[in-house]
Length: 181
Image (cartoon, rainbow, N blue to C red):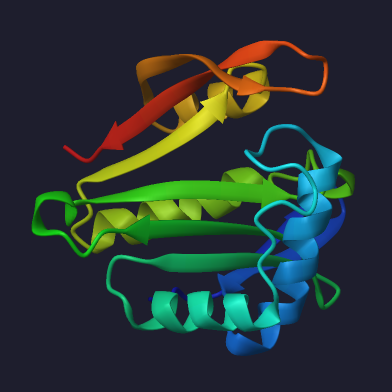
């Protein structure tokens, strides 16, 4: 699906949040690869699970026509610096919910980009009969966990020793959900 573009000016940075389009595929492929190398908050190490331009074109096409999917990008000076995605299921028993994920380049943290991508996704979900948004977050990502709680997500469970990070230690994954009342 699509949303209307939104403009933001935060700490002297102007950015736009809009729905992804086919022309964004190469930039999204590059962005995802860079994000995976900047932080261990994602499930992949850099290069793992690589999605090329063609793969992102397919994702964007699917997300554009599906009433249960949404792919958003954050753009600064014609450069995609962040993205988020809500993915629903075609199965009737899960048609009421979507899985949410987000990523923002490290140099653009602290400008509210992740928060505004999430807020736009929540607004979309609430107006499109999505009853539940779910996400997973590594326990070390305190700022994200606080943001999710602030925006109505609750901890639903903990996957113990779920992720092995570069320090050789295992970390828990926090399962969170937001249910529209």
